[in-house]
Figure 1 (cartoon, helix red, strand yellow):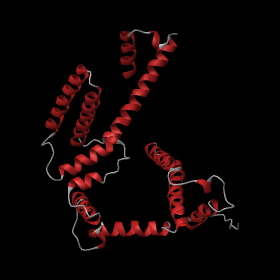
Figure 2 (tube, helix red, strand yellow):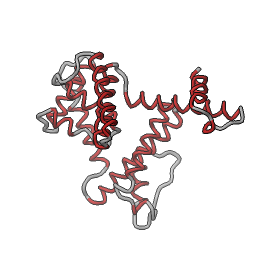
Figure 3 (cartoon, one colour):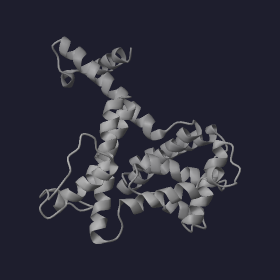
Figure 4 (tube, helix red, strand yellow):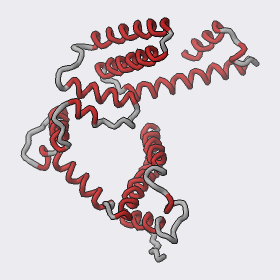
Length: 262
């Protein structure tokens, strides 16, 4: 196998590197991989990009974007070997999609606000995917998405045909209603009912977040980080006094929690 070593590589070089890794005399691990075997890698690399963005770490962002790009090229190479498509087909398709969905930039359509742009995007998306109903548009939302994100996307599509609450108060009232149904299901002891009602409650909370203009997935992420910080402070406070959290009463734990909140 021949490969040209350089001081500076570009995208075409990345494509060639991946091709070489997959050759019969390439890397034993790389040439054994399939779409499914590296599926989780793609997910993990994507989340690492998100973490770099959240931490405003540009050096790490550059590195992690490279890891994601590697995943894209790797999947395209697998299909290239089958003679189905290659990375150039992928680039062509996304270019065509972006041009078609931005007629206000590449055509003569007027869309001078973000709302108009998004409205046009959804209409064009439904046309190109041959979707005639909002149900079909909802069904096309990836089921592999985190459920909070999927719920929000479904609610937004339902709202486009008027199926929505009129205001935040109405959405909040639905949460109260669903919470009562959760309590009733728990009292009944019906396991299926409990799971169903808790799902309805979570779906309703996402609605409230949407009305409040809050990203529910990000809000829950931040809540987890806040809980972790406060719990860590509790644990350290207890350790400083020579005790373990599990040996404290609930009232003592509450006291430590309230102190951590300060």
